[in-house]
Image (tube, rainbow, N blue to C red):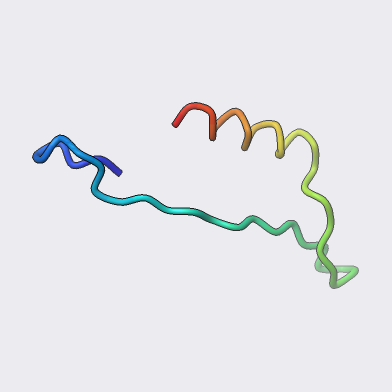
Length: 45
């Protein structure tokens, strides 16, 4: 997040994404299409 008033970074963050199969009650790999979209979005920052 950038402060336009102060012209500098105001905040940074990280996140953890977990793909979960509720029927099987366990985590599962993130679908490739979603993974690619996340990677593309991260490269825009």
